Structure formats: C-alpha cells, structure tokens
Image (cartoon, rainbow, N blue to C red; front, top):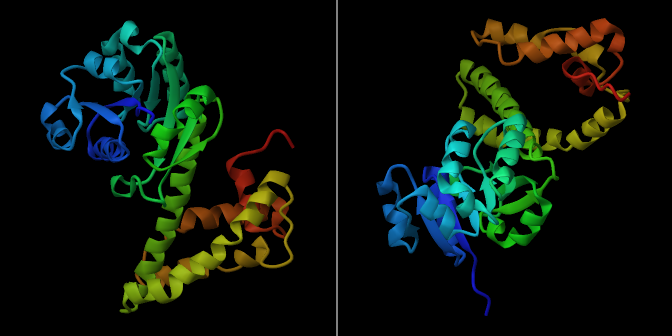
Length: 293
C-alpha cells in the first residue's frame, strides 16, 4: 500500500481552502499556512496540520501549492521558506498573473532549488474536485508527470508545455471568451427586458440553445484563423454590417449598445479594408497580425 505524498498549501482564501479540502478528501497529508492563522481552523478540524510559519509549511510538503492574491507576494513568501527548505521540492503556483510574471517566477523558484509549475484554475471554488473543472499547467514536465496524482485531486489536469507563461496566457484567453459570452448575454437580456418580457424564459428556451448551436461553428472559425483563409459561402461581413440593426434597435429601446459596438466597429473596418466577402473570423487580423504568413 503506497504512502500518500505530503502537500503544503500556502494561502487559505476561498480557492486555497477548496484546494486543501480536495487534497484531504483524496487522502494526502496536508499542511496549511495562512497569514491570518484562524483561516486554517476548519481545515485543521478536518485533518490538516497547521504550520506556524512559511518555512515550516514548505519543509513539510514534497509539493508546495501557492494560492495567494498576486505574484508580487509569491517570491517573497517562498524566500521566507529558505533555500534549504525549498531544495528538491515542487512549487505549484496557481496565483493569477501574466505570462511574463510566470516566467520570472519560474527563474526565481528554480534559483532557490525547486521545480516550478504555473497553474491556471478554470473553476470557481465550489467546482473544485468536480468533473467540469480543469486546471491548466505549464513549466516542468517532469514535475507535472511525477506529481500528476496530487494535481488531479483538484480537477482535470491539462499540461500545456515547458514555457511557464503558457498557463496564464491560456487562462486569460479562456476568460476573455467567457466575458465575451457574458457581454452578449447582458446585451440580449437588456433588449428582452426593455420589451417587458421575462429574461429567464428567453434565456432557457431561446438564447441558451442558440448559443450552443452557434458554438459548434467555433472550430471551423479557429481553422480559418490558423490557415489565414477567411472565405465563406454564406453570411459575408459586408452583408452583416450593411445595417446596424442591433445598435439602432437597442437605442430605440433605451438600451446601451456599448457592449456590441466595439465588435461592430471592427467588422466595418475589415469591410472597409477590402475584406467584405470574408467571414467574421477575419476580424482577428485587426487585433493581431500573424507575421508568419
């Protein structure tokens, strides 16, 4: 019977607490630390060990999970543990940040003698350890493979590559897609409410099925972006921007069009640049010019 690894969790906000709970449920030996010691009380009652200091927490875990507010504090926190304590350990940093911050942190952590993985948690705390959650990882492949069991206690683990910046970049890209969907929903909801209709019924019976159907076209659009061929047989951009119907009706209904207006402006620019016969995927060229083509 194998002995479960020891794991330390630094930072016990809502997400850090959820991660520590998932580890306890999976049978790992869990040590926890938080600046405010009282945040650990519930976890200690459920079987975790409370560390009195960062160095004690780091020394106790083969794997050290860092889940705090921002990168500015991560390096200083780990350095409190000391080079001796960190040597030979794996640091998994699931703090939100940028690709450049992740790369700089990887250099800083490896200089302290530890291996580094950066993580992007694609879930809210309530989703941890549930099938729909997943976590993006980038950095040391060896560390990922060796400690995959620990990481899988949180959610489905997705390894993106050795560049530590890949996890935060993909995290932010996924969030961008999510907020775009939310923006479309809010505009749609405002339009429906302006007519005095119930938003909940509209959403469940019409909008959600429509968005599910439209999302099926995303892989084809993605292939167009990869190839640079934006030709379409139906719904060319020139037709889509021939009238600002959404903006006009929104204003007439007393609804602000400001969530939709930036996309419509880009679509019009693409047509003005001579690409009216293409599909909407070509708008990406106004946001990022692919120099490899």
